Image 1 (tube, rainbow, N blue to C red):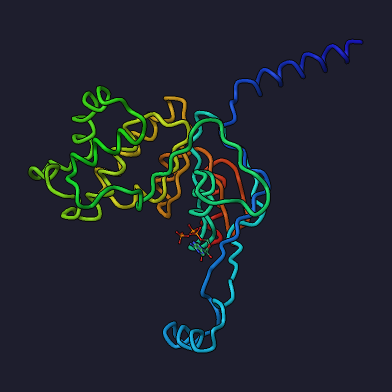
Image 2: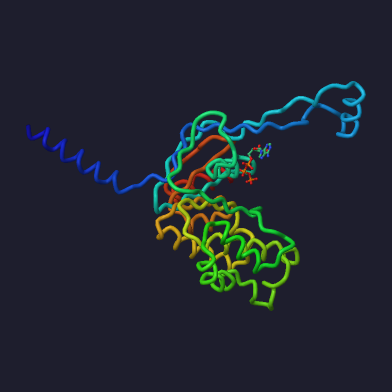
Length: 270
Ligand SMILES: Nc1ncnc2c1ncn2[C@@H]1O[C@H](COP(=O)(O)OP(=O)(O)OP(=O)(O)O)[C@@H](O)[C@H]1O
C-alpha cells in the first residue's frame, strides 16, 4: 500500500514538473528534401539548354538533396536553443522548416504560437529609407500604427544606425551589410515573439551590437518566448543558450546542455 502511495505521489509530482514546461515547438522525425530543377549532367547551362531546345526534350532531371534526415526534439517556453554543426549540415533548413517556409517530406512540426524567422536575408525594401522600413516591418509584424509610433525611437536607438549621422533617412541600399543586419534585428526584436528563429544575425553586427543583441535575446526569453539561434560563433551560443542541438549531415548528433554539447563539438572539430 505504502508503495502505491509513494508511486502516486511521485507520479503527481512528475505531472506537476511536466505541467510547468510548456512545449512551443515539437519536431517529430522530420525529413526535408530539396528538389533541384535543372541539375542534369549538361556541360554548361547554355549548351544543355540549346541541346534541349533542339531535341525538344523536357527539362532535365530533378536532383534531390535530403537535407534533414529524421530529426526529433521538443523546445519549451523560456528556452534559448542553439543549433550548431558544420557547413551544410542542415541548420538553416531546420529553422526555415520550423518557420513553416519549407514542407516536410516525412514527419511533422507542431508549433504553439507564431514562429518568426529572423535571417540575414529577411526581406526589407532596399529602395526605401531605413525609417520607412522600420514602420513597414513593424506593421508587417502585426503592430498597430500607435504601437509603431511609440516603439519607433527605441528601434532606431537600439540599431545604432544614427550613431554616425542621420542614416535612418537614407535608402537601405546605402547601408553596409552590418548596418542592414542591425536594423533587421532591431525591428524583429522590438516585438515579443512566441518563437523567434535567428539565423546568424549576431555574426554580422560589430562586437558592441552583438552584446546588445545577446542582452535582447535574454530579455525575449524572459518575456516567455522560445529563441532558436543558428551560429558558427560558439561564444554567442554559450552566452545566449543553455541548451544546444548539434546537427551533422542532416542528423541529430547531440541534444543537451550547451556546456556538454560544446565540449563534444569542439573535440569533433579538433
Ligand atoms: N535551396 C536549396 N536547394 C537545394 N539544396 C539546398 C538548398 N538550401 C540548402 N540546400 C542543401 O541542404 C543542405 C543543408 O543546407 P543548410 O543551408 O541547411 O546548412 P547549414 O547547416 O545551415 O549550413 P551553413 O552552416 O553553411 O549555413 C546542404 O547540403 C545544402 O547544399
